Image 1 (cartoon, rainbow, N blue to C red):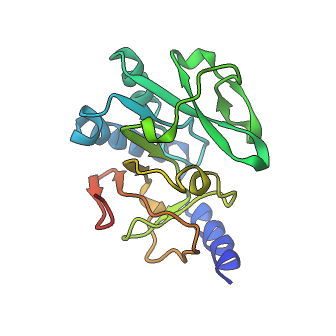
Image 2: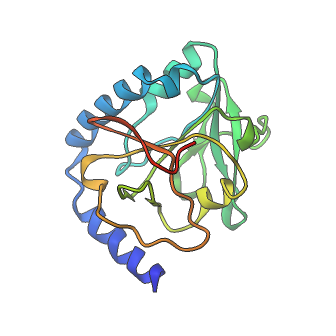
Length: 189
C-alpha cells in the first residue's frame, strides 16, 4: 500500500515543480544556508550529489568543499546493487552514469559512509518529521541502513508535504536545508 501511495505522492510533487529559474533561485538560498551552518562548517568529510533538474542544485556547496581542501564524496550508482560514495578532487572528473547522473569514475577511492561528517541528500519530497521521499529505488535507504551520519536533505519549497508514508526500511533525515534555513528534526542526535 505505501509503495503505491509514494508513487502517487511523487507524481503530485513533481507536478508542483515551478521551473528552472525558481529552482535556481531557491537553490542559491539553500546553498547559502548550508554554507553558513555549523553542520557544514564543522564537517571535514562531506558527501554530496550532482543534482537533477527537479532537485536543489548544491553545486556551489560542492565547489566550496573542494576549494577549502576538504574531502568530497559523490555517489557512484552500481545499478540494482546499490551505490557507493567515491572521493573526487574536481567536478570535471565526473562522467554520465546510471540514470543520466554525473558520477565519479569506478577507479576512484571509496569513502565509507561512516567516515562522513555530513551527507547532503537529494529528494522528491520531505515531511515535517524528516521522512524523505526519493526516486523510489531505495539507494539512500540502503546506503544509510547501518550508518550513523548527519544527513541533510536539500528541499525546494514545493517538495514539503504534510506526510510521507514510511516503510520499515525508510530512514528519516536528521536535518533539512530549504530557502528558510537549516532545521534539525527530533530524530537528530
